[in-house]
Amino acid sequence: MKTTKTIKLIAYLFIGGLFASCSPDSGDDAITPVIPTTYSGEITEDVTWTSNNVYTLDGRVMVADGATLTIEAGTVIKGAPGTGADASALIIARGGKIMANGNAANPIVFTSSADNSTNGTSGFGSGLSSSDQGLWGGVLMLGYADISADANPLQIEGIPVEETNGLYGGGSSSNNSDNSGVFRYVQIRHGGAEIGEGNEINGLTLGGVGSGTQISHVEIIANLDDGLECFGGSVDCSNILVWGQGDDAFDVDQSYSGTIDNFLGIMISGDQGLEIDGWEGTMQADFSLMNGTIIGASGDKNNCGKFKSNASGSVSNMLFKNMKDGATLTVDAGATGVTFSNISFEAGYTQTLVDGLGTTVWNDNNNGTGGATLSNFDGWTCASYMNAY
Image 1: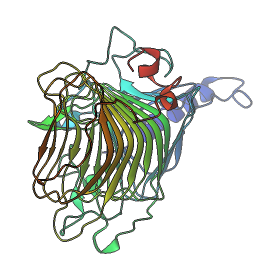
Image 2: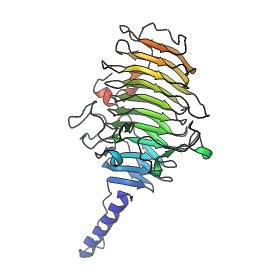
Image 3: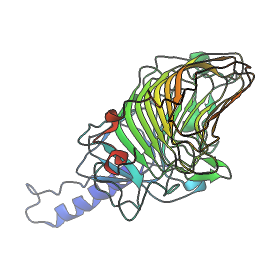
Image 4: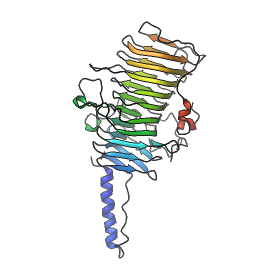
């Protein structure tokens, strides 16, 4: 599949040449080719997306090994509708890079083509809200860092198996300091399209992403599946907000060994605030979750979190607010490698620890203190603009 950029650019050059040859003054007045703004297929050379254009992802767009996609602050990128193999998504393949360096005044926006928003600081467009899910795919970053599966690389969740740009993990060439670029001050809205039954794309998927990558100040809104999911890798993430996801807000798999610091989950109809899976195979590494707040809703699910067998890492300074009465934080018997400190709940709600470890892992004093520094999300997020927290 050829890059739409390349195809369109050739067409514009050809048309421009025709006009120039028909013009009596073509010598000094040659037509400047129009830069394309609709992309599909592979990006195989360095390219920059500028804030004066709105870009469209028409199906899978893949930044291939050796190529760098640079996105200016304030740029808006929209995913065309589609499901299955036609779902629109941006994939940063192993060896590729993204340099998406927004700022608080001009965040970069990934959203649906149904969203007529022109910037990231004025809420939703076209009648969309935080409950409009699955209108396109999402963003996937893949790298060469360690994952716990013995046989790797693996194919990332949400991408068809025949797509070789969907591989993650380094196998015998593993590199925990791998660098996939910069992803800062970015919003990802209304994603999570299905490629098959029960196989949706996460808002931001990190597969084997190394510690050389910089990820901070990311808002993920109304994704049909998980908000942020880390499959192994060692990258640190900070100031991450997930709002209105359909499944889990934050999901960790395959011995993710980085730190997620200062994170906020705002539940509407999702499943778990935290879904922490254990290691697979023989490789084991520990995650760190610190300074997090989960704000619940009245739905039938909306549980605090679940730590599955073989989960290993630390959870510190967590606050659960407005969770439904009886919401659970479940620790399976095999999750012996998880430690907890300073976990608290907002007063007025009854929470339940389903503790397979047979021990008390926190002091539930319902004092409602601690958690994320919410002011870090002020000004640049839709959640701030819509007073969602």
